[in-house]
Image 1 (cartoon, rainbow, N blue to C red):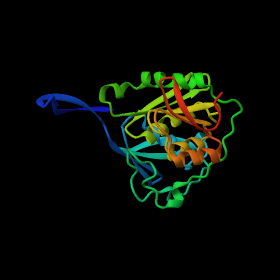
Image 2 (tube, helix red, strand yellow):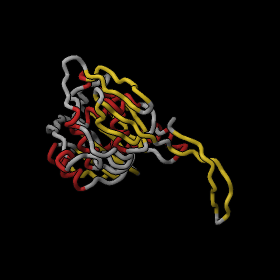
Image 3 (spheres, rainbow, N blue to C red):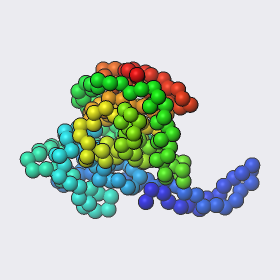
Image 4 (cartoon, rainbow, N blue to C red):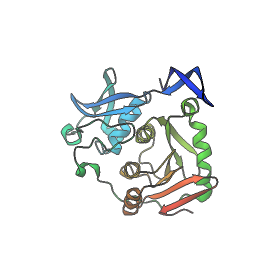
Length: 257
C-alpha cells in the first residue's frame, strides 16, 4: 500500500477543521543474502522485488541480473536474495552498519571508502536531444499516480533517447525509486544502452553513481545537480542535466544534441 489515510486538523486562514489526508507509506525492508542482512531500506512498499534487484546491481552486489535467481519473502518486510548457481557473494563485504533512510542511500555505509563504488566509464555514441529532454517532465508527471494523492513521493523513470518511456517507479526515497526502475528494466533489457534516467528532484552523487554502475549514459532531473555529482559524472562520462522545466535546462557535463 503506497498511501495511508490519517485524521488530521487542517488550518485555512487560521481556522482549523478536521479532515482526512493521504500520507505516503514508509516501512523498513530488510535485504538478506542467505541468512545475513546486508541492508535495511526505508521505502514505500510495492515493487519490492524490483527494488531488491536494482539495489543489488547499483550497489555492486551483483554484476548482472542473471546472477539473481529470485527473491524470497522470509518474513514481514524481509527479502532473501537467492543467488544463481555458481554465484558467490560475501555478504559482509556489502553489509551496512546502519539502515538506509528514505532521504539518504549512502548514509548507512560502514566507511567513507564504501561510499564510492567501482564504475567503468560510460560510453554512448549518440547524445540525447534537447527536444527530448524538454518533454520528459510532462511524461514523468503523467506516471506519478501516488504523488497526485499525497504530494510526498519521488519518481524515477527510464526513457530511450527517442523519448519513449521504458519504465517508471515511485518511492518516498529518490534513490529507492531509482533502484526500483533499474530493477524493473534490468529484467528485460540488459545492458541499458542509450537511455536517460530522469528523476523528480535534484541529481545527487549517489544517483549519478547508481546510473554509472549499470551503464546509464545520461541522468537528468527537475532540480539542480550537486557538485560531487557533476565531478563524478565528468570522470565517468555521464551526461548530467538539471532544472529540466519550462522548455529549458542546465547542461552540467556531457553532450546534448
